Image (cartoon, rainbow, N blue to C red; front, top):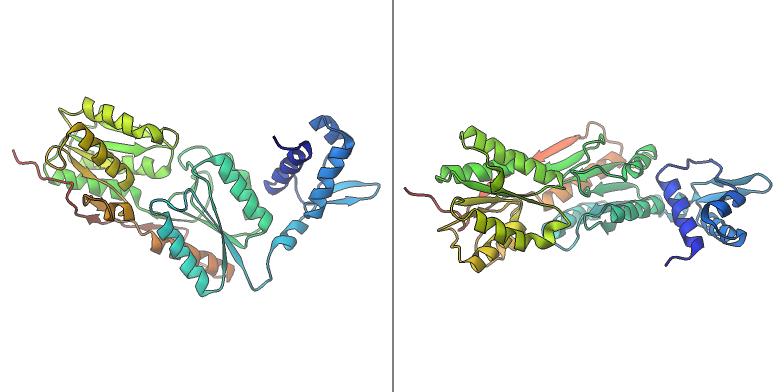
Length: 362
């Protein structure tokens, strides 16, 4: 359990960093804080002293304690060594090492430092990461949003960056409630091409597995529905399996149930990404479903796990390293005062043929 003075420190700091307390504003008196947190005056004073030492507060004798922004100059490096913050959902998994490699290679060219954090697609961890970036005083920020298809409770922190004129750009997705520049794969097109490929191979009963707390899942479902509509094929809700960050750990069990229920009808599945595609392969082996003879599978993102799997997954491209480079380049140019930078960039996916799709012959 946190010491009581630390709870006060964390909450006041959060209020300053999120903009709930603005620069120069007087914070509640010691007596009010004592009452608010049910602590002794000594505990309150310890918290205020620490926040003052860190540059978040300044006290004026006989007047009160006020919000300061000295923490920015304390943490920021020398003027010629700028630091770019990078917040991604994951760091060592899936396509993220390639994205980060792209960011790093571009930042190195201009001697920028990189400060890295991940959220595990959890908004509480995103809050911590944003507070760390604001406390450190990063010069720019590259963010992959957390649960981008849901309301985000951390919007105030992003607005704080805007108020401080700290440029930031989003990758892979964006928060629709914020006006924010982004670099994304055209996710609608990715699933559309995957579904269209299966239709061209004679499949009419095509399932979808989609992660629905991220914007990519919403758009990938849209592409799937679009391709079915163009081909005049019916959309069957029972042929869609959706999951989110929390239910991902139950995906294997849910897939078994889904595949057993649809075994007589489904001949193909469009998967949210390669990770899901390979999980489907794994479950099919357990159930004795032959791939691609009985079931065709398409992944998405052309990740290293698809390249290194013991079956060559049919998939679609994702810019990965290029996206990282482009995002870092955008932030650098913004800091250099360049105008007319793009507000939205979509990369076009391309199909990569593997051995998990088979043509249906009547």
